[in-house]
Image (tube, rainbow, N blue to C red; front, top):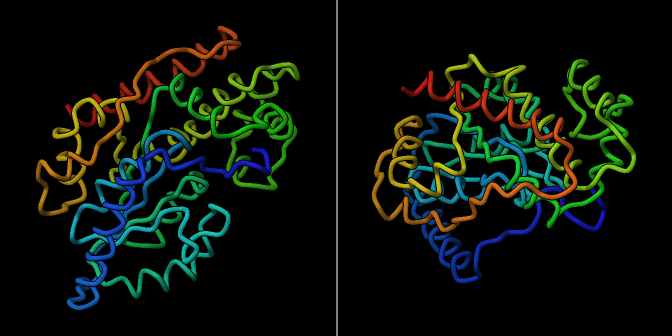
Length: 280
């Protein structure tokens, strides 16, 4: 990504919404410090950038029993990457709430390690249709194609290439072209970040896939399911009411070759098939 744009993009929520949620968080923090409770579990919110993880964090923050750490929180993150495990352990040890929630976007290759290190732990992996994700990403980020070129050559100097399998790297090399559009580069990134789920986590019962489209179109049902999975008490209509976005268009950005679109469609179908098998 370009140096001018952050790795996670801008916060799309309105200023009144951010202020209201910040006020809730402040009040909750005061209450938790006055009446601290033992830590019971850790929750990692994972997924490709621009997939709706902020939306999910908001509904988790609405619970009175959570303490949440966004990737903009300098206590837990440095330039949007999670700080050393020792730092996160210290934060978790001081957590006044039963449930410690933290973003893990740049750490998709480390989810198993993180859950094994912070037991008991669960993960919510957010998946958004690759077309909408790519459209959103190219508005916030840049430099997708040069990054693609570095990754196919074996670059592991940052989180994008960390944990990438040899099969994925070979696929990137087969599909690469220097004149590819930024939209195609964003679609490729959606693929190589989300394929990590099937390479490392598909059979892990501690992980639940959350579809962005389902979350925004059926908030009561989906937020209830998330709270049930995490065993969070106090679900109500007000919590699901935090779902504000309706950006579900499935409009394919221009300049994406059919073979790249088919690759992403196949991976998205794998997520949907897996989800239907697990939750039916």
